[in-house]
Image (tube, rainbow over the protein chains, first blue to last red):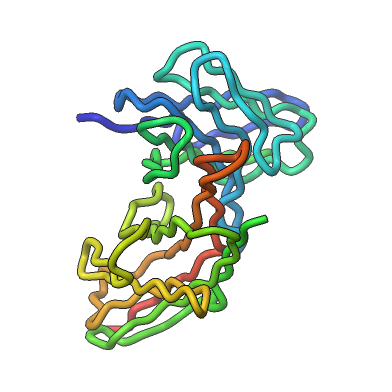
Amino acid sequence: DGGITQSPKYLFRKEGQNVTLSCEQNLNHDAMYWYRQDPGQGLRLIYYSQIVNDFQKGDIAEGYSVSREKKESFPLTVTSAQKNPTAFYLCASTPLAGVVDTQYFGPGTRLTVL
Amino acid sequence: AQSVTQPDIHITVSEGASLELRCNYSYGATPYLFWYVQSPGQGLQLLLKYFSGDTLVQGIKGFEAEFKRSQSSFNLRKPSVHWSDAAEYFCAVGNAGGTSYGKLTFGQGTILTVHP
């Protein structure tokens, strides 16, 4: 089945550690997105990528980094510079770059800082 | 900058009752509008979208939404709610211009509780 997979489902991190969240899609979609979700705040865009080897900062990029070395993969690293990383992280993709279209979401990763 | 407001944080309805979730947007051009639903601990699923044409849009699970340009609204409706509709609902507007093309801006969400 085609879709977006995110791993792990739950992730625990000690303060001061970097962690990487995985996002893989087999939909052959061009564009990929990372969102952060906190209760009562909706979804906020962290980074997005329209093509391989290119990505742009979203509204809350500080303390995060991404890479897009392959079309199907868009991992997110939460660095120790992110002051409040505990949140639910969602990855999404759209078929074509540069157009508004339905975003397809993965199941999410819940990150907790201990 | 575009924005989306969902005025109701939490709505409670009885099973079988009608439902309307409100969404107001701010966008300079013709908006691209979406409604998504999220079950607890899950990703988002598209209910319906409006790009152009008929302002009354039908979606999955018996939902519909009406685009009203004069009121900058895109309210979601369902004539009879089922217990399985309990979830969080998000309205979103898409950016079709500038360097942010393709981006979606989401509202804060409305949590729907359904009483038996």
